[in-house]
Amino acid sequence: MTETTTEPWDDLAATAQPALSPQAPGRIVPSGSIAGRSLTIVIAILTFLAALTAGAVTMLVGTASDWQADVGREMTIQVRPASGRDIEADVHAAMNIAQSATGVAEVRAFTKEESEKLVEPWLGSGLALGDLPIPRLIVVKLASGVTPDLATMRKSLAAQVPSASLDDHRGWIGRMRAMAETAVAVGIAILALVVIVTVLSVTFATRGAMATNSAIVEVLHYVGATDGFISTQFQRHFLLLGLKGGAIGGGLAIALFGIIAALNVWFSGTPGGEETAALFGTFSVSITGYVVILALVVLMAVVTALASRRTVQRTLDNID
Amino acid sequence: MIRFENVGLRYGLGPEILRDLSFRIDSHSFQFLTGPSGAGKTSLLRMMFLLLKPTRGLITIFDRDTATLRKDSRAALRRRIGIVFQDFRLLDHLSTYENVALPLRVLGREEATYRAEVIELLHWVGLGERMTALPPILSGGEKQRAAIARAVISRPQLLLADEPTGNVDPGLGQRLLRLFIELHKSGTAVVIATHDIALMDEYDARRLVLHDGRLHVYD
Image 1 (tube, helix red, strand yellow):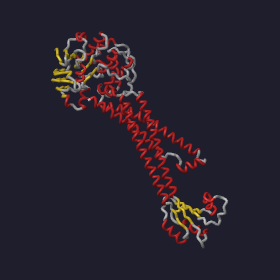
Image 2 (tube, chains in turn orange, blue):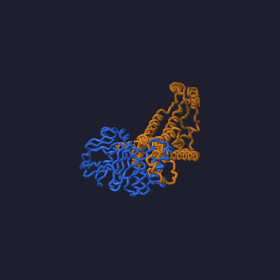
Image 3 (cartoon, chains in turn orange, green):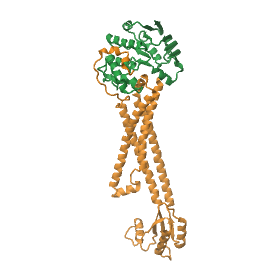
Image 4 (cartoon, chains in turn green, red):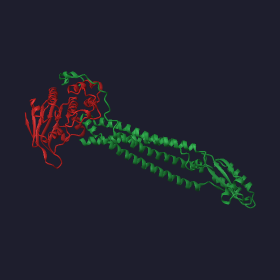
C-alpha cells in the first residue's frame, strides 16, 4: 500500500482536486469529552477527601506517639513530710539518688513555694500554708534511648528516704497507650473505608465515562486494531485523567494542610493556640502523611486506568 | 473464501429469519446481495463478518470453521475483511482524513507512509475538500463515501458493503461502483448488499437474492 501507483483508484484519480492539508492525526480517544471532565472532577473530589483522611490519620498517629513519648520520658518522686525527718534533707537525698541513677537526664525539685502553688487551685490563695504538710515533688527527666534502672532507684529511695515514693507513670502511660492505639486503629479503619469507597467510586465513574466510548472501541476493532492496541489507547488516556484528577485533589489537600500549619504557627503565641497545640500537637502533616497522599494520587490513576482497560476488554468480549 | 452450508439464523426465540443458506463466496469474486428491505441482507453480512453466530449450519471463512474459532482468531480473520456499515460508524472526533486513515494507523504505520495514499483516495471519492471536516458536519453521502474509503484503504481480501450507494446521487453511485470493480480486479472479493436495481444493472455480476429467508443464487 505504500506504492500509491498500484492502487485501484490511481487511474481514476484524474479528477483529483488540490489537497487541503490535513492536520497530523489526532488522539484516537477524545480528550475533551464531558464524561472525561466529569470523571476528572469526581476523582479530584474523592482524592481530596481521602487525602484529608490520610493526613488527619497520620497526624493522629504522630500526636499519639508524641503523647506517649512525652509522658514516658518523665518520672516523679514524691517526698511526703514525716515526723522526725527533715523534708529538705529528704528532698536533697532523693535528688542525689535520682541524679546518680543511670538513664536520668535532668532532675528538678519543686521548691516549697512552687509546691504550695500547686494546691492553690483547691485551697485558694492568701492562706498561710507554711504549717501544712505539703508533699514535695521532684521531676525526673529521662534520657532518650537509655532504660533507667527503676528497681535500684526504688531500693535506694526506700533505704535512704522512706517517705519518698517513685511514680513512673506506668498506669497513666498504659491508659494513654490504650486510648492512643484505639484512636489510631479507628483512624486507620476510617482511612481504609474511605480508600475502599474512593476506589469503588472511581471504578464506577470510569465505567460510566467509558460507556460513552464503547462505539469507539467497536469501530477500532472493526477496522483491525488489536485488543492490546485498543486497551493501551484507553488505559493511557484514563491514566492521565486519573493522574490529573488525583493531582488536583491531592494538591488541594496538601495546600489545605499547609494553610492549617501556617495558621497554627501564626496563633502559636496565643493561649488558645498553646492549648490546641498541647491537645492536638502541631497540626503539621509528617513526611509519611505526604507520602500516603502521593500514594493515593497514584492509586487513583492506576484504578482509573485498570477500570478503563477492564471495560474495554468487556466491550470487546461482547463483540464476540 | 466463505462457505455457508445449511445455515439458519433466528433472533432469540423468534422465527428463523434466514433458512438453509448454502452458498460460496470465492476469492476474486464480485457479487451483489439483494432482496427487499427486511429480507436479512444486513444479518447475512454480519454473519460473514463474524458479528453474528448462526443458530444452525456451518460457516467457514478463509477455510476456518467459525464455530470453533477462538476470540483472537476471529479478530485476526476480521482484519482480512473490510466492511462498510449502513450507519457508517465514523468516529465523530476524528476528521475525515483521520477516519479514513484509521485502519492503517491502528496497524502501527507511520503517517508519512500512508498520507499520500489516503489523500489520493479521498480525492477520488470526492472528499478532497472535506479532509479536515468532522463527520457531524458531513452530509449523509459524504459520510458514506468516507466509510467506503475507510473500508478499502487497507486493501482487504474481502469487502462487505451494506447499501454503499444508498445516500449518494446516481453519478457518484456509479463512481463508487467503479471503485469496487477496480478493487475486485485487483484481487479483492466484493459483496455489495443493495436493493438498487439500477446499480446492479450497471455491472454484470453474480446476484445473491434473499427472499422469504431463503437465498437464490443467479450466477
